[in-house]
Amino acid sequence: MKTDKNTVIGFVLLGILMFLYFWYTSQQQNAIIEMKKREEDSLSKVAAARMKLVDTVALKTDSLKRDSAVRVAVAGNFTDAAVGQEQETAIENELVKVNFTNKGGQIKSVVLKNYKDANNQLVVLSNNSSISYAINTAPAQSATIDNLYFTPGALTKNADGSQTLRYTLSAANGQSITHEFSLQPNSYKIGWKLEMNGAAQLLTNNALNLNWTVATQQMERTSQYERQVSNICFSEDNEFDYISSNTDHTFEKPAQWVAVVQQFFNSTLIADNSFNSGSIKWARATDSSRNLATATSTLQMKVPTAASISVPFHFYVGPNEYEILAKQAPEMDKIVNLGRDMYSFVRPINKYIIMNVFDFFASFVKNYGWVILLLTLFIRLVTAPLTYSSYLSGAKMKALRPELDILKKKMGDDQQGFAMEQMKLFREAGVNPLGGCIPALLQIPIFFALYSFFNSEIALRGQAFLWSEDLSSFDSIANLPFTIPAFGNHISLFTITAVITSFLISIYNMSMTPTQDNPALKYMPYIFPFMLLFIFNSLPSALTWYYTVSNVVTLLLQFVIQNYIIDHDKILAKIEAKRKAPKTKSKWQERYEQMVDSQKKVQELKNKTTKK
Image 1 (cartoon, rainbow, N blue to C red):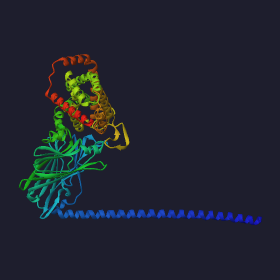
Image 2: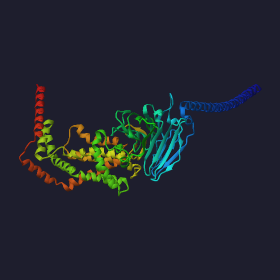
Image 3: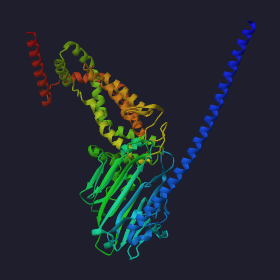
Image 4: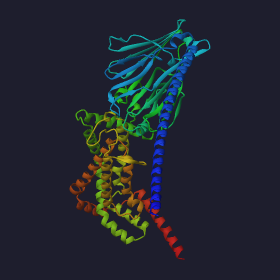
């Protein structure tokens, strides 16, 4: 039995060992198979990639061959220009470096030497733009010049310091097209003279049809806000106009220039002899890329009926600086948005007051944050007489508040009776209950003027102050891992200081006015600062800094005037003297009392009917 038991145990152990052996062997074989499979897959992928590469190269080669064949076919008398190698030539002055290309004989890009983008690279404009027009290359054949290769001439330096570059397109039959570009010293304006020999044959019905396409890219901190303030500006019949929310515009009258405008830069095509007609199509980007918008302008011009013609144009590619734009072409200074449409009433405030005062302080103060502080103090000084009268009215309201509280308890729920007695008390005391609204009313045009100014003043761009890295953009002390609708994904400290100071002003004003039973009126002073938190958070820090300083000045003035200038005992004495003096009611007061009295009688009649 013992032998049998040992035998059984031996067989069990042998079986376990064999199972383990076969399991291990199986695992090894599976690993080998898996390894071979991976090797085969890798080889297959490499082979497929090679095949795809070969196919792509072949397809690209075929495509280029077909494209070249098409170009040659439509080139007509300009066959030599149908196929070529792109060459670039640069012209520089103190402000810009303009890169030209022989393909189409046009501007390739413009580098602004004194400005950097959000990535700390030099601003590059017009690098995604093209200008073209169609020509008749032979009977029943036409081509666009952006597909033809011009012959570049030598760069010429003139006696006046300007530089000239000519591109020529020549045909076998003697026809020719020349694009002559010129650049003056210290200028953003690029001259373009279009010359044609054989224009009657090259153009149909003596009509030059220009197609100008510009795609703008982000230069500022956020593409979303830069898109929002981008627009198309133009001069039609020598009058400035623009489109922002609309997507197209058709010229019904001659147009002098068309500008594709970003927040602080623009690319403008100027026709010295005006375009006869045309249209613009405008589309903002909606994705999260650096692309802002694309503008396509189709512009028509009638040229003289002559064998040879010369048509002058100019490009302006540079900053939206008011003084510079005013010298480029009539109405171009209005590209700088100092107030438009329903806010056009603030443009004179900006043009004749804000800009001049700002430039004056900036002439001797180097930090623009302190310039804004001085500008704020200037504004408050100018408006001081009006604000003082409002503070005086507030002091009178404060002096009357104990009487108003007693009157309110006396009248109970009779709101209409209380309103009537309140007006009577105000009239006796010579108090204007709307006098305290003057500072708020003054803030409206000043705020909208400064909103336009700070959004468009390029001098603020990139200027740091305190914790703000750029006064032309919002300041941020913390970035959120999510986006709050209407608020953003950051926290602006200047916005917080503006909101807190506004809240303190609201609390102070509430202490000066009678207690309100209406919840809407009671809590409105607290709701407004809360709304500012969402309105201000993405606005330029220059504006929120101004608002903070203005609020601090308001609080200091209120404290000083109420505690050291206004004598409340004298105010009460004057109120008593006013009460004893003969009263004359204004027509407005008479009508108001009649209205309140009528409403009171109607309410009493309703109460009697309800009781019955």
